[in-house]
Length: 131
Image (cartoon, helix red, strand yellow):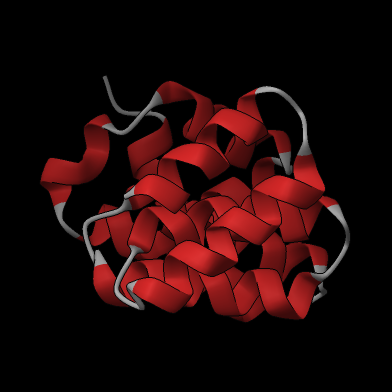
């Protein structure tokens, strides 16, 4: 966890190149490190390295299938890349299990910010308007 912790510290300090190096080192030493994949994916997405970010998010999901954030990040990155259908399918996954409906509000807000039609395709009209 040393490289992962150092990467997180560097990320917090906005030292991105070094954080990327640390996350890659953490993955090299433990290829089943979902947090390292997730954070590396964020940094790569910010650099418009979408293919590699998508691969990182997929790995984060592979090693932690309950990581709702990874599904959303993957979905948003796929949408940014123009892969709308894959994006919608990916974003629906955390909501397939109704227990996941209490996910962090920032994710729901972000989805809705993509537009009403996109949100409807993810959640369905009845869910958006239910009390």
